[in-house]
Length: 244
Image (cartoon, rainbow, N blue to C red; front, top):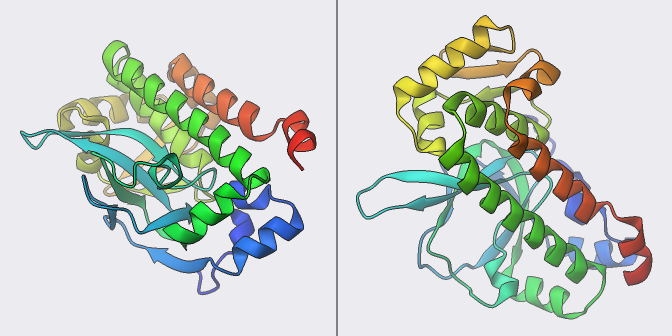
C-alpha cells in the first residue's frame, strides 16, 4: 500500500465541493487506513463517524438470525459510509465491512451533522448520494432474485472496479460467495466460465478483469442502472448551479 495518504479529493463527494466548503470540511477529516475485514459499524450500534473512502471499498451487509449474510450495497470513492447519521437514525440493522483494503477519511458525527445542516452543496450531494444508494440496494435485491450467479458476479466485479484505482481484487471465492449470498460452488463455476471466456483472470485469492467491456456483456442490466443513476445524480451541472 502506498505510504502517502491520498488527498480527500480522491473521494468524489468531497471533490465536488466548492473550495470554501471543501476547506471547511477538510480541516476536520481524519485519514484512516482500512484493512480487509475491518468492521466500520455493527447492527444496532450507534455510529460515531462517517467514512469517505478514497481507495478502499466497503460492503454494507445484512446478517440473518441463522448467520447467513449478503451484501446490500457497496461504497467506494464515489460515496460515504454512514448515511443514517444525517438521516436521523444514528444506527442501522446492517453492518459495514471493508471488502477491499485501502484508505479513506472519517468525520466525527457531530461535524458531519453541522456541515449537513448548513444547507450548502454538501447537503444536496449527500441527499443525492443517498438516492443513488437506495437505487443500488433496490437493484441488488432484484438482481439477486432474478439473475444468474454469473450475471451477479459480473455486475459486482464491474461495480467494485469502478470504485477504486486497482484493476486486481484481493478476494477469495469464499468471500465473494459471502458477498453475493450464494454457495461457493456457484461462484467457482461462474468464475470458471468468465475466465474461459477471457473476461477475467483468477488465481488463488486474486481476481483481475482483463476485458471490462466484454464483462459488461456478461452482466445484467443492473450494472448499467446503478452506474447511470450515480452519474446522473452526482454530475448534474444544473444541480450544482442551483445550489452553489
